[in-house]
Image (cartoon, rainbow over all chains, first blue to last red; front, side, top):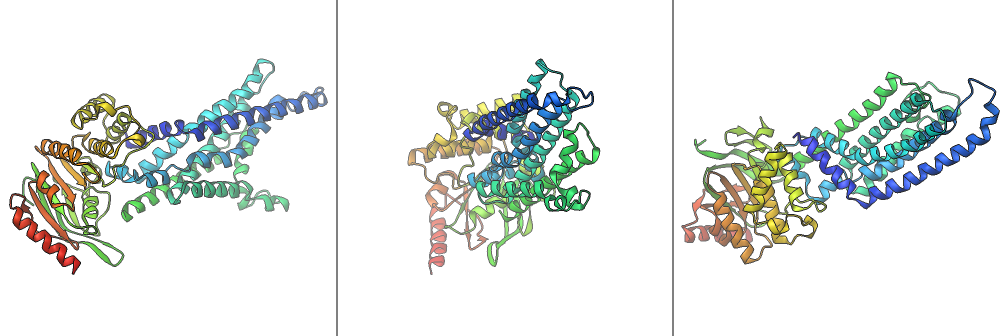
Length: 252
Length: 239
C-alpha cells in the first residue's frame, strides 16, 4: 500500500473518531435542512409569478442553487475546523518523525492528509445533496444543474481542504491553523468585493476570487478554466505544504 | 566500509545554529551486534540516532544502511530501519492493533502480510492482553513496547532505539533486554542510554559519545575500562 493511502486511511479513522466531526456533520446538516425549507417557502411564494413564463426559473434555480451557494460560503468556515489538526497535530503528538522514518515523502504526507481531510466534508456534501434531491419525488429537478452545482461545491471543498492542510503545516497550534485557513478562505471569498462595488467584473481580483469560479457551476456551466482554477489551488497548496514538510524534516 | 557492516556512517556532522552536536563521526555496526551509545544528556545521542534513522539530514557525511545510501535512496534505506524514538510515537485515538497495522501499511505491506506481521510483533513484544486497548490508555511500559513493536513490524535488519528503557520499572526493563537479545540475531542494533548498567545488560559493545565525537567501541565485558572511560568523560563535562 502506498504511504499516502495509509496516511489517508488513518486520517479518516481519526476524523470519524472525533466528536468535532460529528458535531459539524449534525450542525451543518441541520443548517442545510433549514436553508432548504426557507428556499421552498420562498419558492412557493414566488412560483405563481413565473407560472406563465415557460423559460422562467424553476425549483432548481430558486431553491437548489441558492442553497448550494449558501453552503459553499459556509464551507469557508467549516472545512478549516476539519483540517486544522492535519499536520500540526502530528507535530504536537510527536508522530511526524514516524512518517518520515517510514520513508514517506513530504508530498506523500501532504497528499495523504489532503485525501484524509476530505473524508468528513465528502460525507457532509452527500448528506446536503440528498436534501435537494429529495425534491425530485414531488417536482421536476434539473439534475444536470444539480450535478454541476455539486461538482462546484466539491471542487471548492477540495481547494479549502488543501488550504487547510497548508495552514496546518505552518501553524504551531491547531487553532491558529484553523484561523489562518478561515482568514485565507474569507479573503479568497471577498477578494473582488471592492472591485465589484466599482463595477469591475473582469479584473485580476475578480479572477482570483473564489465565487467567480463557483457561480458558473451553480448556473449549470462547467468551464475548464474554473475546474483548472480549483485544481491549481489544490496543487499549489499541497506543493507548498510538501515543501514545508521537507523543511521540517531538515530542521529535525 | 567493512563487508558485514549493516550500519556505516562516515564523516557525519550536524550543527544546531553555532553549536556542533555531532562532529565528523564514523561508525560501523555489523550484523548480530548490539552497540550501546553512551553519553550524558545533551551529548548528541538522539541527534545521531535521528540521522541514522533518516529523520534528520546530516550537514555533511554519508550514511549507508545494509549498503543502501540513505541520501541517494532514502526510501529504500528507511525500509531497512526500525526506529524507536525516546518518546514512543503513538496515535492516542488508535488501539494497539490499529497502530501496528498502520505502521506496517505505511511501510508498504499489503493487507494479509501486514496482518501476519502485526500478529508476530504483538507476540514478540507480549502485547496480546492490550491489543484492543487505545494507545491513550497505555502505561509507559506498554507504550514503549508498542513503540518497539512498530519499529520491528516490518522485520528491519537495523534497529535504532533511543533510551528504550527510560521510565520503565526494573522488571519491564529486564523484559526489554531479553527481547533485544532475541532480536539481535542477524540484525544490527544501536541503543542509546546514559546508564552504563543498561548498556552492559543489553549490548555487546559500547561507544561513548562526548561533545559530538564518538570514542572507539569497547566490549561491554571490559566493564572496568568502560566505566573508567565513561566517568572520565562525565567528569570532563562537569569540569
